[in-house]
Structure formats: structure tokens, C-alpha cells
Image 1 (cartoon, rainbow, N blue to C red):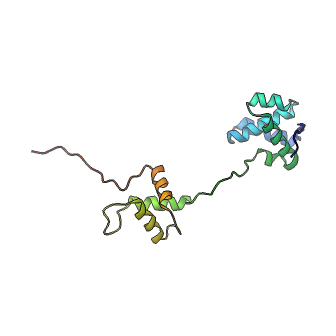
Image 2: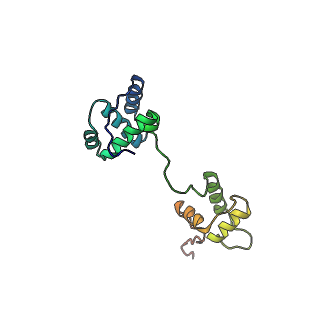
Length: 159
């Protein structure tokens, strides 16, 4: 990586047309549109410092995107790079099947669902190969489910 990279972006007619279409339609994510706008401004002859000031981002970011355009092309300069971190433990379908299981009656002999019971039952029913209690807890919390509580209905007294 070079400590300082002079920014000189000269887009082709096809790239200019693609960027103009993206900016006019506005259907892309905000990050992609910001990168497109950045490349457009650099193509217009603005310096990295001017573009950084206009878009309220760091000059280093402007140079990095310009370098990526120069080395890898327009598509890679606009695209999101993969971010670090673990992949999700449950796929969407697995989560939905576990939620459906929790919304049904608990197994025979059990009064209500617990987080441990849900984890064990999901593995036993082969909804997932393995799952931890914390994963189940987070899943239930994100869906605002509390299956361990009984619903208490308050009724007025009848005479």
C-alpha cells in the first residue's frame, strides 16, 4: 500500500452513464450511492480533499475507493467488501421453524417452554444440527417471545 496516492480518475463513457443512472434512480444502498458520487466528483476534476469535504468522509477513504477503481474496476469500487465476523448460527428457515415450534404446545410432560428445552427439542426434532441456549435466547428476544410465561387473563367476577 502506498502512503500517498495521487487521485486521477478518468471514467469511460459507459462508466459515466452507469454512475449517472445509479445517481438518478437512487435504488442502491446509501454507501454505494456515496461511492458513485465520489467517483463522479473525482471524474469532474475535484481533488480528494474537496470530495472528502463535500461528502463528509476522510480523504483516505476517497483515495482508497479511487485506488480500488483503478486496480479492480468500477463494479469492485462500488461494491461492499465482506466484513469480518462470524456467520449467523441459524439460517432464516431454521429460525422460522424454531419459532413455529415455540408457538405450539410444549412437549408432553412439560408445562411450558424453557430456553434449555427449546434448544434440546430443536436438535431432537432435527431442525438444526446443534444450537446453544444463548442463540435461542437471542432469537426469542428478537421476536419478543417469552414462552416460559403463562398468560394470566384477568376476568371480572360474575355474580
